Image 1 (cartoon, rainbow, N blue to C red):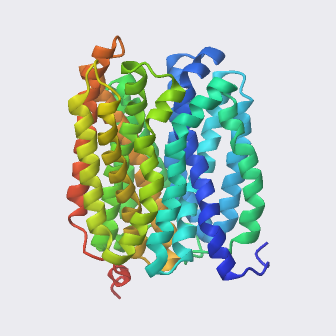
Image 2: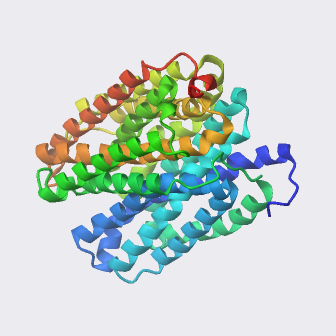
Image 3: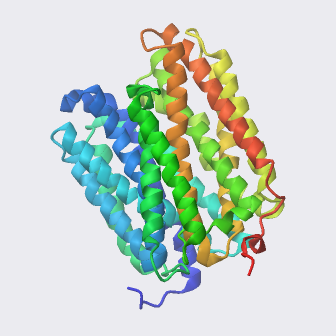
Length: 468
């Protein structure tokens, strides 16, 4: 397929949509599966631990393998491995739908996470490298809007599918989408490569082991106890391996993540800000639907519909945010967006009580939705605005892993706060925990805004040119 002649203008018309489809698929499964967990538990007679690993097995392989996915794309072809990732995701989705017990489902979800680890970083790299700097923000904004469909439609779609069909269909939906998209990826996208001619095997092993230890510790913190030997050993080992990875990358001839990237304030600050942005967002994704179901008595479908003032902002605001970032720079949008997310989440934390009405939730939901819709495209554009095209794959792998780690971290810490202050015993007990948990989510957004303050007014590619 590499020999096929493709009109570059035609390529840019397709690339945002096709890259967005892969990102949408990987993000959609994260949101939709959470909606169906109770039904899956009853149908497969799954234990609480098995149900937890239905989610965690996907997140674990997703986070650990993302940099590997980016490196493979840089070395052997971004378009080629994007198509491989989509095919792997389709096969794994079918295996999930055919699961007859919880063990099979967990294994299939692990494979699905591996496919997503190719889709997420390569989709962003394909978009960023296809557009010049002056148009990249608009392209990433449109890409973020397509991905936002997963967040916007996920709870509603999951509830509708489970209510109208069966939980297996939340996985079967991926199959026709992927089968249609794969031939288009191979014929409508041009191939792209990174600058390296070898694979940094030592770096891959160290960063994968480090990510595994950190994610394992985070996902096991609440069930096993944050002071348990299992969690402490996993976290310490993960941090030690990441430190070893940094030392290795400083010495190796062709590093998978050159340390001089971090000489750029734009690259470093925007990656830090996206970590806290996704940590705050995912903690809200986890608890907002539960607030509607536990306190207001919504079923999954109505909870999804009631979240549309929040999730709909991802579709309406993100494309415009990308265009504005191209004109005024990313820092103002990133700081403003994170402050709005903090205001919206903090507002909901303050008003949460058993007598909460849906009408009082709408304004803070809109404020929060606008905030994250401004912040995410701005942060992603700042990462790529600091890089030459042949380095974007490496940056995308690091950025994608930090986003996933941020999501796992955010859910872990807010669940720990919730468990210490509330429970699911009653609506009153739930809101007792919801308030402090979402208050912490607002604090995570403020931390991201503080990091974003250290960014320069505009990202510059020369910042990343290493000294001779």
